[in-house]
Length: 285
Image 1 (cartoon, rainbow, N blue to C red):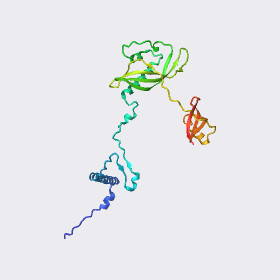
Image 2: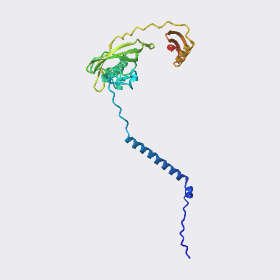
Image 3: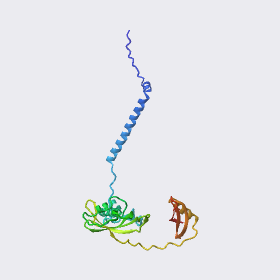
Image 4: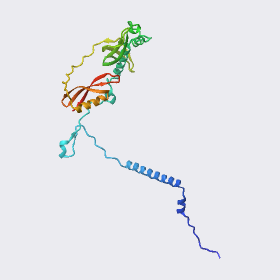
């Protein structure tokens, strides 16, 4: 006799899950985490598209800002700045602000350095002559056979003034190191010349004439130094010595004077070759 009862087989899902490879479980976990993260990002984008902050009303110049009548005394008035000129960052940092004037300054300093340098250069004054107008009648230069040696130690422009259409008169101070025949170098006095420079629309600069001698401008009369005090407090001595040690070695207090709450301390400090240099250190005390 045939048995008509239906038999249902049970699938052991728990056992199958237990036998799953651990690598597969980790992979499913990463997929689930990525899905949740994507849903969160989508929710934030949707919320931002539907919500916008209230607009901030513009504040007119001269408007008084205050919370209520009780704090009216601490109200802030917005100043009217509409009449003031606006400068870009480049304008504020430029010195001088005119690009053509800056080009003239660079060319003048360069020319003075070459002009007053006379060494053993085989080309002699060729570079100096090339910097001047073509066809100009020029005298002999020390670079063409002079016996003395001269090097420009530094050259700095201290004034520039417009001198015509695209022309600038640049005042340059400089110092040379000179060596007469058979003798060593010595530092020469600081001198000054003015150089006429032309600047093109593209920023190119050309020297238009030989340097002209000018006097150095006189500086202001300095105020006398305060009278010296014999013994500054030990705390002041320690601070001055510590600050001077950042420059050199073996700091020694030479003198000190007090002006109000500030001590002016003169310290001598040794450099790497053994020379001791007097320096001043200001210490509050």
